[in-house]
Image (cartoon, rainbow, N blue to C red):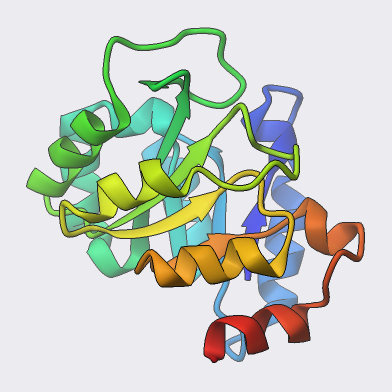
Length: 193
């Protein structure tokens, strides 16, 4: 399960208490990955302490090598993923108007050299659009040897098949499930085949 605090990601508040209750209710039977502009050591440690299986280091923090190194040493690469949000081929943290002079692949190489093993790659222009994920961008990052979960734009079971066929570690689905374009059972069956 991927739980993202979009209010925090978009700079419109946060849903800390909802996250805490969700993680407590999920218990140990459900693996929960938490994201949503988690950019401080305290926020990341809090989500892990509340029971998150893995926390996504927000893109705004992922560009800080000292912070990423400290987080990886403290929590381990299995408990962390690095968020790589992009807009027009450049790194751009969700909710920010700042586009960095850094490509997603450059950021991926950098965090991999620090010990990161998992990346969540989101093309912000596709997020919530049902236009299909950026499989080419995700595949390019995966070619470095990172486990890549693609996010943004998944609209159909074909998109999920495409992510699986590309050798990606997974795909995050939001709006398509919310709108009933397919069910969770259909999605799981699709990628299990």
